[in-house]
Picture 1 (cartoon, rainbow, N blue to C red):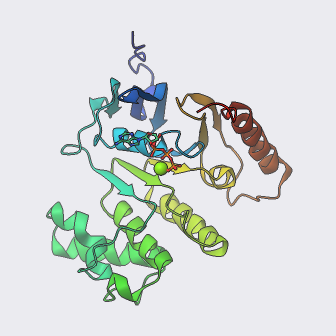
Picture 2 (spheres, rainbow, N blue to C red; picture 1 turned 135 degrees about the vertical axis):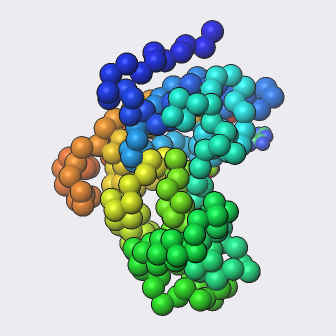
Length: 264
Ligand SMILES: Nc1ncnc2c1ncn2[C@@H]1O[C@H](COP(=O)(O)OP(=O)(O)OP(=O)(O)O)[C@@H](O)[C@H]1O
Ligand SMILES: [Mg+2]
């Protein structure tokens, strides 16, 4: 039977924004074998796990796009519902709308919410400044680079004060210097705008660099191998002993949990 989390009682527990207790199978394929965790308001949570362990499936469930075989996802104590909650998704491949300019791509969510045009302009101008896209407002997606398109997608995700921002390996297709710049930009936008972020990556260094906390998942059927707060001050030095210690700890956990070659 599914274990239920205790109802929030103290102030700290009330801050819980997303409360997850799920299991999921696609037919006979068990992907999640019982995952339970909570994410706090304005927390930056990184989810790390090997390819195919069910990270994207988990994000689909968190977004309310896929119903788990068992269990539930609560946002602010209510079952997640894409019509009721404002969930932003940033995908691996930049997802811009090719027929809209940069400005209008970022404004899309605000316009759907019918925000006054003056507010749309103010928010979009502000956020385009944060992601370094001032001067490109009137460009179309085909006129800008892949990294810039991803910045448009990130700006759009933050523009609407989402309940939760889900990011699915958003930098995986970028070269290392661009990836590092984007990581710094996401942190700077999050530090200014705040928001509850669930960031999926299979890059352990990225997880330790970005997150307030990292959850490491095993290969499927995925279970939680570690759930560790990262308290290192930002900006984090990837060469510091403490940083390397955490990364090595996560790497050895992942290696020890990989299926044997003879397995699936
Ligand atoms: N709609 C579906 N129907 C059946 N099986 C699926 C479906 N979606 C995903 N799967 C399977 O579920 C497992 C987890 O897939 P998922 O895409 O969530 O993994 P992932 O951790 O995001 O992998 P990657 O790191 O490669 O992106 C895989 O074995 C995949 O084949
Ligand atoms: Mg995936």
